[in-house]
Image (tube, rainbow, N blue to C red; front, side):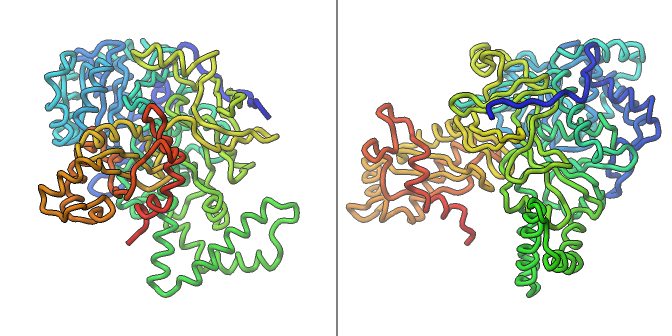
Length: 599
């Protein structure tokens, strides 16, 4: 099949914007808990009425500080209650939110704030404030900086105390559906971040149709979501806004270090995460079972879960014997795993990277269905996802209702719909290329089956996507590492992996000089020195320089020095010296595996 679409289940309001959601919730569900907030370590409910009041108070402060309709205001913080509050406050002041990853380097902060023309930025910590201060001289349009950990919300609330309610009402209604809601920066093939302009319409179409298609999972007063993804990521942003659309309760945690504890205390019914989270839960449970001497039982249980799930997709279904085994393991193992996920979990939506068929069957087999989806920043997160009642494991599902998926002649996945971005900020050429012929060209290769389920089979562009869902542009860091005299070539790896690694080849001419200067044996080669402490330290300095240009999530954590060079003769590079990544990855598959092998 070359094209498939589904009718829209939600009609986007033409004259509204996303602030309508919180006003509607306060009117129609005044006492409903729409947010969960940790106070002294205890989750406390925030009603829709209270949340609206806190948003409006912060919005008044922004207005008092001179934020005007259409002004860009940046947010650089970990995921927390204030992120969501301030996002809505920026919109309520008539502004446009520009998310910045909290791990971003000063160079990235300078580019994003400078390119977007941000007039203000709200940061979380001293480290974030220092990153902004380091480049502030290059940001003439930046007027205001507030810090959450130093009372930004309280400061804004106090500053806006004299701003009339009518002013906020007026500002909240300025933006219409086709006006920008946010500019989310994403890495392009050249490595320089591009600002995706996502309108209020795009988020309405995305969240409205998602919630309607998954309606049994979004029950007001019953369902809840725990957000532990970066709110700066478009997937995290969608996770933050979909609950407001329903509405259901949303809780925020800054990282996943203590995720199991947070899941146990918040007890969400729906989890939206990336494959790395589900891999971690599985691996941790297996490791604990092995440590307790129950490794064989866990492995048998996992095998049963997978077999049971696979059998659900057959005409006959699970056999009686399999049902009995499944029942036994449900009491021994599966119930405990569900408890790790909070105990109330019904389903999860996974995106950002491939989940894997085996893991998909495992989770469905233990009674916790993980619905895999697919999308990009340019599609406002999910452009395809598995429906709750007709899951096809191994696919990323059907198109978002109201949108169209098309497979081009070369296999590229094309998208059309109201949820697609309107263009790249200040980049007409890139916009024209990405939206050629009225379709968004994803750069991914895929197929559609007879029921319109999409399977992603490859990637045209060189962007890597880690197991955690982070998009990584290799060129940025490779160019910096390659600038070191000792380095001949560098290829960043990490597609579908837990972190970013790199293959490094050494410049043969410089290596001889370096070896002599450092007292190494005459005739030393890359093969003889690749484990030398001094050499590794020197290459690490090159890697550190490369890492300085990117965020922590994009940085190279491990590298390996190769014995040989990338050559045109071997097919590793083109005549113009461009890397043929697929050939290098194939020829050095063992070396790449070694990077991710646990010692």
